[in-house]
Length: 165
Image 1 (cartoon, one colour):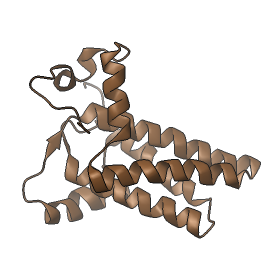
Image 2 (image 1 turned 90 degrees about the vertical axis):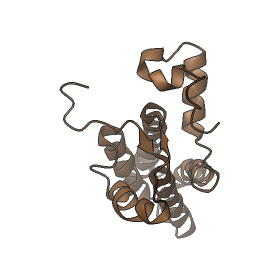
Image 3 (image 1 turned 90 degrees about the horizontal axis):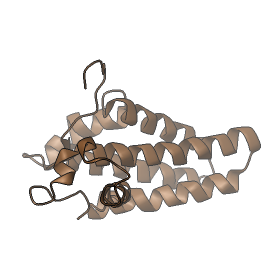
Image 4 (image 1 turned 120 degrees about the vertical axis):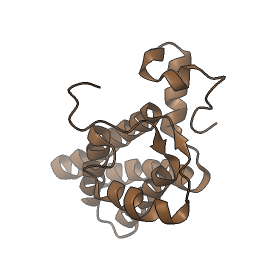
């Protein structure tokens, strides 16, 4: 997009996305198991950074795209960026909510519940390439709530298989 200083990549390397999801799952599980709800703030920063710029401002994104994914796969599997960005946005909403619940209201149980939801979604993405946010994106496109021009590759289903399908 013109004027976008830090554009989100399109297409996205699915291997790198799955590595990031694995990192998110590890951090979420660590927060729950060690009873450290403040780790939701670390996750929130990562999601906000990835929504804003893909891997550019995200330490986990940088690790995944520059170091881990290239060692796992010599040829990246490219998927459309807009559904992945949408999924990152959902992660941002969940982790910012979890962080606010902990920091402002000391509602740690609610934070752990949100982190558990995130853990399940991140594990599905990492282990099975099933992106919950991408599925929601696809449903919203089919319902007409997301216009086809947001993701041309996604709207041309004969030429592109949506992420998670």
